Length: 245
Ligand SMILES: NC(=O)c1ccc[n+]([C@@H]2O[C@H](COP(=O)([O-])OP(=O)(O)OC[C@H]3O[C@@H](n4cnc5c(N)ncnc54)[C@H](OP(=O)(O)O)[C@@H]3O)[C@@H](O)[C@H]2O)c1
Image (cartoon, rainbow, N blue to C red; front, side):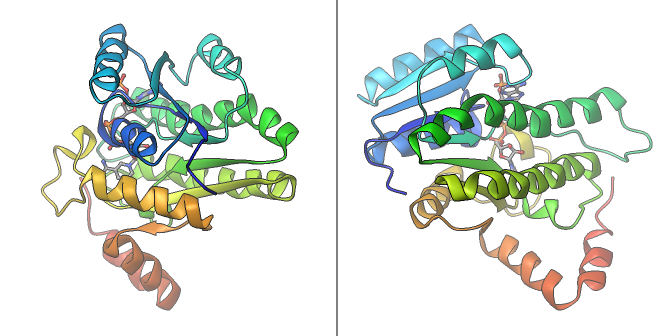
């Protein structure tokens, strides 16, 4: 799908990958980019930065756990590309970590994406075209126990994407779940590992949107994980399973 002239909506665009994606879509020629943020100060900052760069970005108040915010997003009119990017990650042993964090992961990473798809897909179907991009992780395919419940929520998201593709694919709506490994954002600030830049990941996501890829790994490490899983899934699970809290 071409980016040019599209109406795009990105959840979780106050900072990190979502914010970078908003400006990348604008630079790629999108007609209008709705950038979801929860806090008034982030909405204001997005507005002034978009003006400064003359970017067609419209910040909107959007918490993906709030029905009224999602209804307001659906009322913006038909969106061509929805990016379910909003995400939260709790760290720790699933048996001991704060249970509220595990609930929030499912609520934002999985149910948030499902609610957004339910709100926006009908208009895509009506216009006979559209795309839903879910931002998951390569560790949706094999659990990284350091962030075990987070990976479980992203595995649910990946699986949901397959269901959505099954219902929407033949109606002109392509559903893609992208699978990066670590990106240099607030979310990974505690992890002392090699990280991809937000700009690289955003560029790769736009490349895959143009190519209408199916569930692509993003970056060499993610490709290596998926290849390893094809060759020897048990060995890969054992290896990644060493990385614990
Ligand atoms: N960083 C990584 O290593 C990495 C790797 C693979 C995949 N990912 C995925 O990439 C996506 C972007 O993450 P990031 O790295 O950019 O993280 P980040 O810098 O922590 O940003 C997370 C974004 O999600 C938003 N968000 C959280 N809860 C929300 C809610 N209830 N409703 C709407 N927005 C909400 C945050 O908004 P506030 O500013 O209001 O909190 C923020 O804009 C996530 O889905 C993440 O799981 C990240």
